[in-house]
Length: 143
Length: 143
DNA sequence: ACAATCTTTGCAACTGAGTGTCATCTGGCG
DNA sequence: CGCCAGATGACACTCAGTTGCAAAGATTGT
Image 1 (spheres, each protein chain N blue to C red):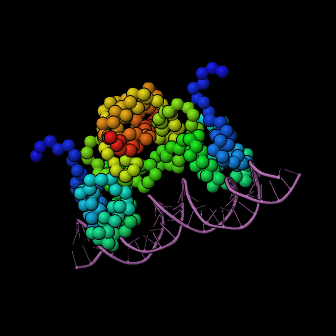
Image 2 (cartoon, chains in turn yellow, green, cyan, purple):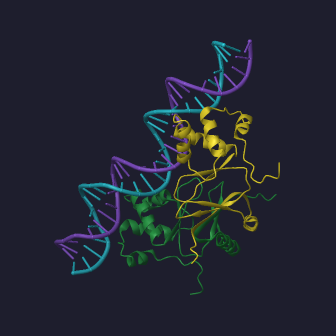
Image 3 (cartoon, each protein chain N blue to C red):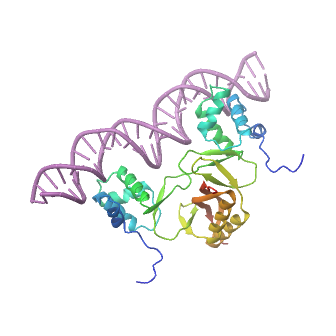
């Protein structure tokens, strides 16, 4: 097994370790998250879950997202003007560029920005607990 | 008059120029904004307005904030886990550090971060329309 | 395998922030 | 002044998410 940059969380193990029951709806939801390349919102996860098991309710999706967020297994992003969107944790920290036309999310990372943020907080006498850096942009048309 | 860094907008003039009527409720609201050092939300503005004229409705506060935002006279910030908070436009661009214990907002500015953001967007083939940088922190206890 | 226990579920009712509707009111021009 | 489009307050509504509750389901002990 080579060096793996994006280590996906083993949701079932995390839930079990935290003493949280693995139920049918939760299994369906974490399976969706595992095979998920984008940043869906709760309703979208609900729709994908309903294709597997139409008895799953939206409440359960919301509740499960909250549980997983609490375990640190997923991250919640409240991008502008829309519902929260989720992504699995476990990869490297990164920030987001949101295409304002399509809603597409592009991940990026800048150690230099992180560093400057820390310098700023330091200078103001604060410890950063977390931050939010979102660029809202439009694809540059070349030509 | 020396070089003035924080030029407060003359709301009445802006409204008049945009052909928007200056009514009693609007006058009260913009007066509150003018003499306002913090980042209140709509409900807080409503409360402060009610002290001057208790007949002003919350709807009108929301509507007025929307109008002023449209004119570029105020900025709306949707910080984590709370309603939108407002500040008057006209000062220099800046970002925010939010004290997660008190909700206090500290403004800061970093040309270097701005520059790096542009570099990143450039590299990804995007033009930045706007961005959001928020640091959520806790006061470092010295000692 | 079974009951006991305690969590989780689906449903529906609720909350909070903000928007839309509409009859009434009013700012500002003529 | 009188007019009247635009603004207001009241209230119904939306949207995202949360909560209360009775019924269903997952673990544990035996």
